[in-house]
Image 1 (tube, rainbow, N blue to C red):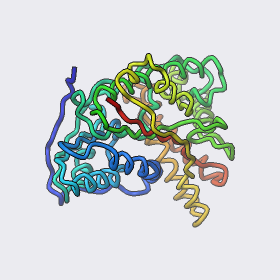
Image 2: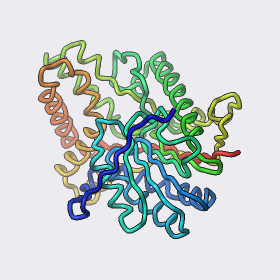
Image 3: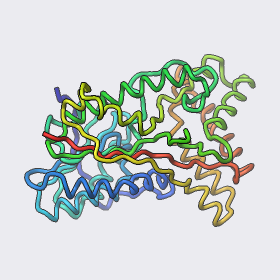
Image 4: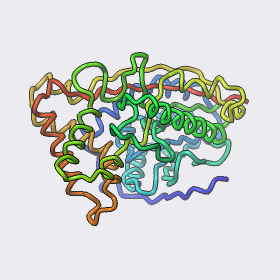
Amino acid sequence: MFTAVGCETSWPMSERTTPPPEKVEGARLCVERSFDFVDQALAEGPKSGPFLFVDYGAADGSASIGLYERVARAVSERGQPLSFVLNDVETNDNATLLQNGQLATARYEAKVKVVEGSFWDPVAEPGSVSLAFSASAMHRLSTPGPVIANHIHANASLDEAVIKQYRDLALRDFRRLMAARGEELSVGGFLVAVNRARDHRDYYLGWTGKGANIYDVLQRIWQKMHREGEVSLAEYRAANVQGFYKDEDELKRVFKDASSEAYRKGLRLVDVRTETIRCPHQARFDRDGDVRAFGEGLGRTVEARARRTFERALAEREDGGKGVVDDFFRRFQEVLMSKPHRYAMDYVQSYLLVRKVG
């Protein structure tokens, strides 16, 4: 049953702000590489009646402003009534998300609202969604995985037992996610999903075979802080990233399995590919040689994605561990600036185009 709560508060255009482009540059590039699938979905999807676009796990929407405008323009030009539902959890910056959605669609007649709640569950009414979208969100786990004793990330741990446990959880969650989308999509509707992934060489975000593995760097700093007594053993072990990067074969399974709930609800895989997108901070450093800008830019990008992992590990502290986490990411920036040619965070992303058939 659909029970999520929405909000539709409006802000004057003069009070809206566009986020600094460098903060979301990598995420924006990943979204933009999906535009061919988005255009195909718009061209082949529902062309009459109300059109509902849903973005699942949208964060603050700053990386997707161009996407929202693209969808709004295409649908408005053919005269369909248009609504946007932007989704993320209650603790997200949903006020900024709503502002960015309104900013992107301001010139078009589109209703925009934010729906709070887990995207593992229904976010929209059954059969109502014309185009579903999600970027860099469906690698997260719905429930905590087992402790990774020797690392912060399962994909980087090299522990085959841990990798299997996290893979099993991730595939279970992906089946659940696709079943929920199969319930919500209208017949003929599409899902475009951009997922952090592994490629055929087992490369993933932060590790593409050159320089240092970013997760190894974070692990070494965290381990050093434990040895120095700044982090307890329990806190050290609690800092595990709750996500797993899947490869194309793992993503395809749910669409090949005729017994899966997603398949029975009509979801069919139209296309899939995996791409590597070069770290924009490293590319900029190669052009201008600005060491500080590189360290601060890449450091802030990684912190935005990983800070909650370390805050959760220190949650029992009176101050929530803020000072320790601040020190952790200060050290990380110093490491990045010490040998900038050695560090980069290339994105490895899978792109899925899925359609619901009758």
